[in-house]
Structures are given as structure tokens and as C-alpha cells.
Length: 75
Image 1 (cartoon, rainbow, N blue to C red):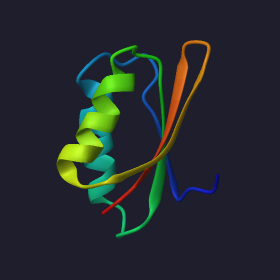
Image 2 (cartoon, rainbow, N blue to C red):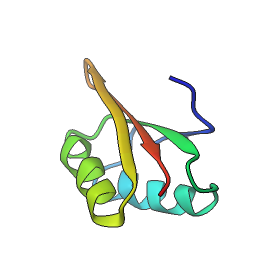
Image 3 (cartoon, rainbow, N blue to C red):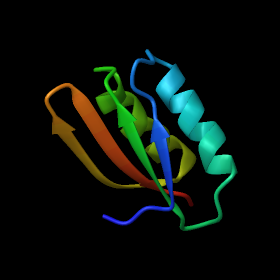
Image 4 (cartoon, rainbow, N blue to C red):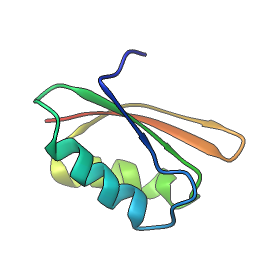
């Protein structure tokens, strides 16, 4: 999937991946996509919840071992 920005949140624990995602989305234009990579198990719940609450679109998420990847489109 194509994306406009990349956020590596590996090594960060809750709530830091979501806080960094919020900050990164502020720098993007509407409809741009950021890829988020995280290894915090809580991110599988936190990132989709954040997107729902803030109106952003979670386009795709996948898990490869301990690595979680999310594609989030800014509202």
C-alpha cells in the first residue's frame, strides 16, 4: 500500500505510539496516509480506537510476529 509518511513507534509503550501518531497526523494534509509500525501489544487496540474517536480512517492493519503495521488516512 502506498503511503505519504512513515512512523516507527517500535520500542514505545502505551500511550506513546498513539501520541506520536496524533502529532504526526497534525503535519499531514487531509487524505494523506501514514504507515505506523509498532511492537506494543496494546497498539492493536489503541490505534483503531484512536482512529474511531478522532475520525481518521484505518485503511489496513497487519501483524507479522510481534510487529504491528497500521495504515491511517487523515480525516
